[in-house]
Length: 317
Image 1: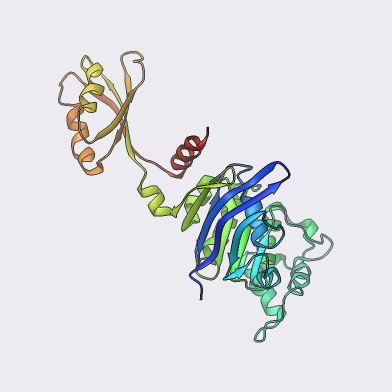
Image 2: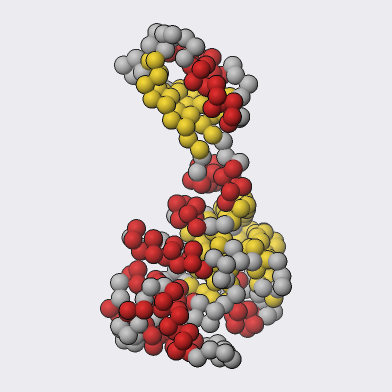
């Protein structure tokens, strides 16, 4: 069994003069929930469509479950499930009938009946009670969940989902994320999104794209673990003006920024390089002057949004 469900090396895709992918490298660990993150136009959909055989790359290579995405495209499609950003159904057919139709594109399972597979798929996405309802009457969130059921009706080894929750309200997004969590360990899930909170909630590993190139790829814990810790303080009193200078002189402080004082209150933002020393000493340094009063104090651990913004902004010319 191959260690990675997907390997992409130097992938390039041009549409005339437009470069959608510019030497993309990517590895998706088998069995992971992999978040494919980037602003609109970063190349996420193009890469996914190459993986499932809907586009041919201009250059580079892509292997899916050990198979070449171009040369072995028929074999790849048998083992991969794909959900487009806007899934299409036969609205006059029921959810169950749509799933039966989709199941017919794949070889029959030697040990399972189609009816059992459909029941299992509907249960996975929470649509058991709507299986006999016409798809045209389903809500947007129900249709999106049905799309996931349709994509995995043949129990694929890799599930590729393009923006599965981007058009949904908070409740609909919650339902889709719960499905992704249930699929962890059952199959490999590669899904794209620009909703940072969703990625942080369910992803094991993340790749960040910009202009068709990979800016970063790492397990979620590692990506966030390398982010700096900062503190936000509001100080007042006769000694408040000297607080930034005293903090900046500490060897565990990486950066100090301040805002102009408003009615005697000054906001101070401190980025630290040593979490333990900062936790033990920061307030002591600030309050070493009896004339200083701290009116607000908050520790902030950088989240995925901070990492994303720093990487994308840093990559811009």
